[in-house]
Length: 195
Image 1: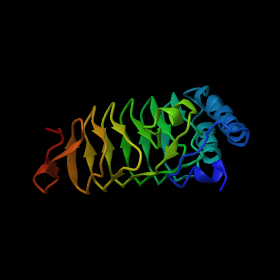
Image 2: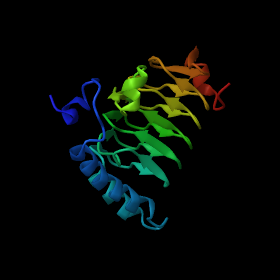
Image 3: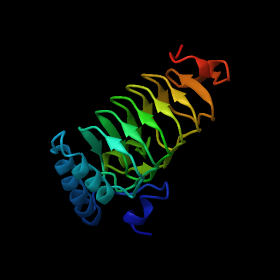
Image 4: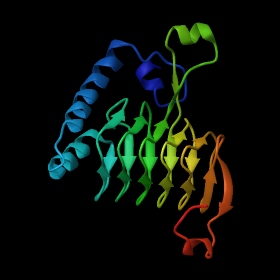
C-alpha cells in the first residue's frame, strides 16, 4: 500500500512524498483564491466551494478566512452548513458535517495526528482519522475537535471545548476535555441562551 493510499486508513504514512505534496499544492492554490474573494462575490464563492470540496450541499456559507490542509478536498458538507470566520479543517482525511450545522468563529476540526514515537515524529510521519459531525449541531467559538471523533445530531458544543471523545445526540457538551453537561429536553428547547 502506498503512502497516498494510507492517508484514509488510519495507518502511519509520510505526508511529504512528492505525489502527495503536488496534489495538495493544487488544492491550496484554490483555497488561496477563495480567501481573496470580495464580500460581494457570494456566487463566486459558492462556485469555488463546489470545486474545492468532496461534497457540499445547497445553501452552505463559509466566511473567509478559511483554512484547510487540502482546501476542502476531503470535506463533505450537507445542506445549509454555516461557518463563521477562521474555520480550520485539517482535512488530511474525510470530515463529514450534517445539514444545518453551524460553526462559530475560530473552530478547528482536526483529522491528523502524529505518533508518540519521537523517531517517527522526527520523520514527520502522521496518521489520519475521520471526523463525523451530525446534523443541526452548533459548534461554539474556539472549539477544537480531535481526530476520530463523532458528534451526534442536534448537539451543542460549548465555546472553547476540546472534544477528544464521541459526543451523543441531543446534548449540550462543554469543557476540556469535553463532557456532556445535560440533555436537550423539551423544556431546554424553550431557552435560547446556553447555560
